[in-house]
Length: 179
Image 1 (tube, rainbow, N blue to C red):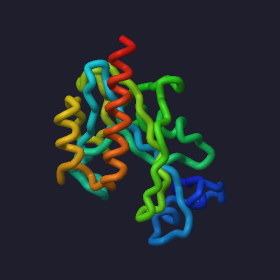
Image 2 (cartoon, one colour; image 1 turned 90 degrees about the vertical axis):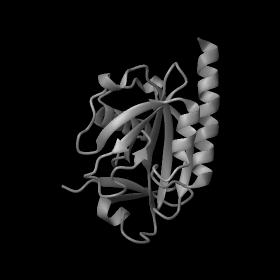
Image 3 (cartoon, rainbow, N blue to C red; image 1 turned 30 degrees about the vertical axis):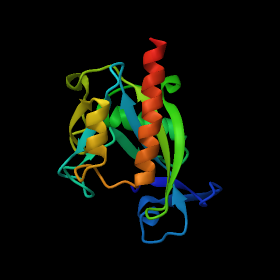
Image 4 (cartoon, helix red, strand yellow; image 1 turned 30 degrees about the horizontal axis):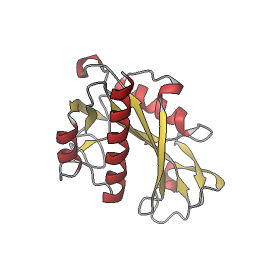
């Protein structure tokens, strides 16, 4: 059975439900919402995943640790938490999954819901979704920036990357100050 997603106008007005294939058709005329989720740890490192070679889009590229579509009837936070469980094998408490911002990607007709969560686990403690994730690694902030802006990372708008970097920098600084 094909996945179904809630659909929206560009300004976020709810329009109904459509299938995944309708949402991913060329110029569908409506938007859907994926959850784009980033993880950081107490050491100020950022987790990245290497996409499986089986993936249709950008196999073998580095990417954010969890990303996926929000199912019809699911809240963005529920979708982000589900994706963290599916892709990394971690249960994230609702209070720990923090909504950061929304990003409109007109080329793919998506209104990305960007979340951050703190994760103090070693790579070896994560249970990766084999069909989607080949490996994960923690990177210090400098190495993360280099990888994010390289051709080894999935193509993302520079504006989006800049927003993620700025928010992560602030989040990590705040997190360290609270310890």
